[in-house]
Length: 283
Ligand SMILES: Nc1ncnc2c1ncn2[C@@H]1O[C@H](COP(=O)(O)OP(=O)(O)OP(=O)(O)O)[C@@H](O)[C@H]1O
Ligand SMILES: [Mg+2]
Image 1 (cartoon, rainbow, N blue to C red):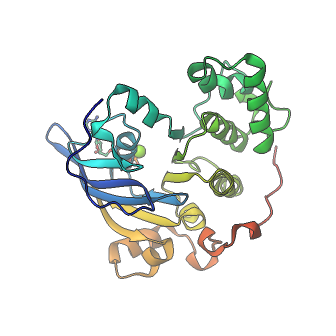
Image 2: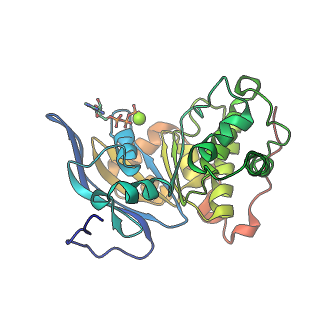
């Protein structure tokens, strides 16, 4: 067993993930320059920022693919840097990843794509139990009777849902979405936003979304963090960023062209049973 980190900051109990003054350099290039994030349990945090700001680097640190140069990432009160291999594997299973463009394996059916993590990590599960679990998740996500399709036979929105079904197979507590709406038309983007919110609500998941899409950020974020050149320069509800004191944040949001007076927000939609009806399935 690896020893716990002797230096333990006070972490608010609502923090699922606490990113504590993380810096990351590649050689002489300083990419992250002191990032602190409090990512609250069962909420959606959106990390926004321009190209090259360091978003993907941050994502790789969150899922343990890279180590911070300095600083610490605490998940459920445990410092990721102080985990041994067994503990790290357990930790990784808390996370699910929904990749940009879904990242499905083109030569496998929907069933085999979604079953993949179970076959890798649940050796004792029989093939009929795996199939049942996959099909019930597909049904839940509005993909009835799609299990024998190939990914090429699905729409962009359906592929995203298959990617989400796959990410949910190991029952993660935290879902990380990399640019979930990039490359999608506005209507499909809305459906993906609804799906992110429904998934969070239904499974009690903490969502971390990396995004360029301001309209989507307004719809789904409980908190947004604007990253510029490796630093969080503004954080809060999207409205606070759009109308707050921080000029750079206001300019970033204004430049996106989104009409902030005309977007529905998850933070308005409480309590959750009053969620809007789901939009109809599009082929
Ligand atoms: N392994 C690496 N080695 C050297 N530099 C890197 C490495 N990974 C990222 N960088 C640099 O770090 C900076 C931030 O990259 P990152 O991919 O995190 O940006 P991003 O915010 O995700 O951008 P985008 O929106 O374009 O995806 C870039 O200047 C990039 O060249
Ligand atoms: Mg990136």
